[in-house]
Image (cartoon, rainbow, N blue to C red; front, top):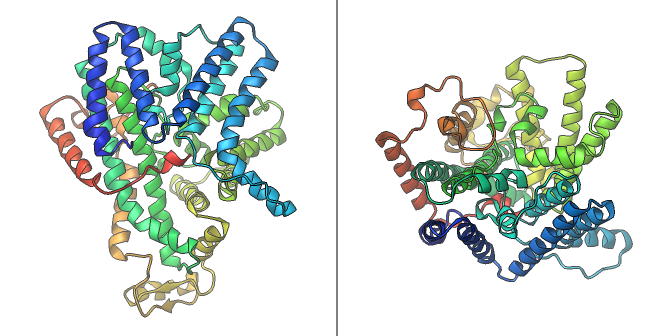
Length: 503
């Protein structure tokens, strides 16, 4: 059940809000249990059998956490962490490593690639963090209902943000249960803005990106214009897909009086890879820092060890996203980028801000090719075109005047007799430029809504945003939000999929 499906929008969400409102009249525990049951129904809608896996995992980790709170134990913690990782490894990586073993030995292990339980990567990180904190004495005793809500809360259940137990349970205890008009208005507004991002903007870019990547996967020779146009389209598709989903999750949480952590803060405005990772998938960056990078030694053991730690963390971060060499390479590239960025800073060097932004954005776009490509061969096919390999600079007749002036830079230019298969021409260029400009110039959702503290994290409002243009509950903004909602609901009639649900 996708957030933008009509089943969710017109059946599940209204019924859940109504049930929560009625249950809250009977007290906190019925209200919490209502959200837990609704979350389990939401999760089980896709594949009911995985409810057994989820509920069993909740029971196991709740029991392990209680034991660790009563008596910290490194062996018991190791067992708990290993059990969670084993579950993730079996479903997500068994087939991948079996293929590697078969390639090295020629022997088939008979391990099939299995359908992933939704959100297993996100849920696994949350439970590991909980067990580690229990062992370190950082957790007060939770009830089963509180722990169950922390793990299963449906807005963040399948694709994040990766919430920490300290993000959720203290709010549950401190905030009164029941529907509040202000939180419902704020939450629905954020949800609709995220829905619009996903259904209208991300899907527009998907229409340009998918054909090119599918063509590369099929072995078609990709040309320079097709490669760059498709890679830029995917760069924007991924951002507005994942950012839109995160906004929708934050909005849904707010409806039920729970503020979720911020996951994106205009990452394409970054002027360095270090800044990029402080803005992109912020909850993942926070988890990798606190529970992997710091335990490995962080930057406390000298510059060489710091670089090794950065590479290790990003390689594992890449593998976390998917069981494939393209994800490992993507993680390795970002690890290399971070090492270079830290070296650059250490030397005290700097670039003019526009040049620093351009170099950062270029590095991110190149790495996304590996992230999206079906396999390594398809990624190299696209990168060969982006790198101006001979025979790849092919343009249609309308583009020859432009490229004739760039022969000194791009080399020989071939003229195609028919339109390029994976490049829609000027319309694609204009849409891509307009959407990129919006991502770089306009305030993000949190900045539009900053007066009402939409998320847990603190951030600076956009400097140039006049108070009169910031969101507030009024007729003008209500009309804008209703218009966006109508456009999004109509757009949601087309079959789409959230990219990050597969991770």
